Length: 232
Image (cartoon, rainbow, N blue to C red; front, side, top):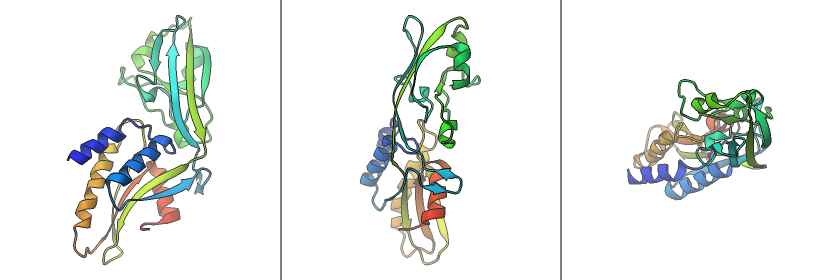
């Protein structure tokens, strides 16, 4: 249990987007802690079906300020403030001008939402932020607000972590979890899957083949199944 909690505490704060330095660091840590892990890499621009591996993306900083330059929201409070794969932006906007770029959840009025449209569809080229709904409601229609989002983008590789043990048959049991996100969307599932490796390793002459797969969303598993296939 100690290793599981240590892994959660280490990986949770990282910006683990589809292609990102944060996800690179997460996989480096996993390889150090869990033996038998192999990392598959798919460079920016690699195509599979109708999806192309995007550039690496990392938010540097982001903030929303009022006319007195008081901070209303920022990445210092939550990385979710900057929508994943947002373009950089800096300028003054009315509430009406900001509206097409802002995501919130009325049913969770004090929480930041996870805006995923730019990450799922790399063709979308736009800036975006998220706000707790209660803060959005407090913004005045007759005021302008300063929006700043600074990001790093460039070539990178989408990574997929795999553990594989061949059994006496080709029947495969796969334990799969997605490791990307800026929140605990499935990180606990990843840690549980990793702990299964010791159990699988202890099996004597297993009947089935076993695979543990940690991948960015549906894209990592799509590339593994279509391009690479299980085992290494």
